[in-house]
Length: 408
Ligand SMILES: NC(=O)C1=CN([C@@H]2O[C@H](COP(=O)(O)OP(=O)(O)OC[C@H]3O[C@@H](n4cnc5c(N)ncnc54)[C@H](OP(=O)(O)O)[C@@H]3O)[C@@H](O)[C@H]2O)C=CC1
Ligand SMILES: O=C(O)CCC(=O)C(=O)O
Ligand SMILES: [Mg+2]
Image (cartoon, rainbow, N blue to C red):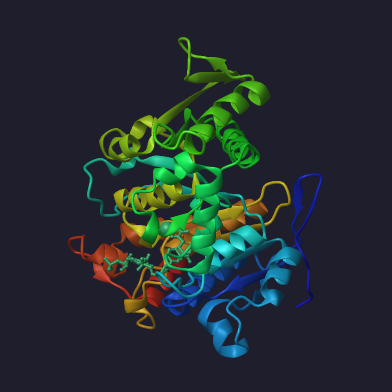
């Protein structure tokens, strides 16, 4: 198949009928999930466009597969291909705890400046949930994806760098140095959060909320404790809504409202710990959520659990300015299940739905949703749903993909 590239001009994607789309299979369960997902994508596109459109998949290497073949965890070639082809999709990649390589997932986001991690969380009829009214959870998380403690500026306890950094702090900021409880043996991390980074994230979240006529946007932060990073995020977010979107104070502020074409968007904020209990108690009071990197990571998995678990939690890492986007599941490699054809491919399948929507291939996206809903309604599910559903048929990962296809 000829090599056709997705491009962007004047902020609009140009998508050829046979686009080449790079993909990373992923570590661990990636080997099970990717082929299942690709089958669903190909069948949906074929059915929606009667063969007029077709994706030309191009595998690129990262993680263990890349290391085994090239000796490099993230070959430069992989970054070049994602840069060149604009839109891609990936399976999960392993990150060791403590030492070893830093996260390849985070590196991809930073290298391509994919500043928004967009994670929609909604309930599908029939999916088992630990809460009584899972249908009340319908949110889209916009997680800042390039800053915060994920920047990776850390000084290991006992290292020369650590000693040098602490000396610098002691010499220049003695009051701050004194606040370190055990300066002789502390690991140190730095948390950069910028006005520019906050503004581009909140701008994208606000545009999304307005275009989709969502009722509210909540800035989630821990600004009571981390005043100049998380507090800055809140203040810059509110200021941007006023300066760029004409938001007005509501009852004297800080909450705001934007009124546009007969639609009202409330802009509010919540402190992260309180927010995490609110999403269990009153989820219908939240819609679009804009938050910092670490909060967004925690919130993603917590919200996913409410609507059926991270087996069906999709996401996209997007730069709305350059058009670059890499779609991926919220979950990780689930190594204990690797190669067993067992886990739920739903998260990568739904990440593919987000990708198709991003490309403007709505008909194919809709077919996949129909297929997924059909398979779940028929109680044909993978182990994660099966253990919580009565009377369900247990399917393997690959069988679930086939069930989705048969219901399209
Ligand atoms: N974007 C990425 O590539 C990400 C990578 N990671 C990396 O993945 C590795 C493993 O992380 P870990 O903390 O174990 O988290 P995981 O998300 O990989 O797994 C945690 C648990 O979630 C459930 N789960 C995960 N995937 C699925 C699925 N497809 N279907 C059904 N259930 C699923 C399983 O639950 P149960 O045991 O109940 O069956 C699993 O044990 C780490 O190296 C981490 O850094 C983590 C997150 C994102
Ligand atoms: O990069 C990793 O290993 C973890 C990333 C993660 O948890 C996430 O993006 O949600
Ligand atoms: Mg996570």
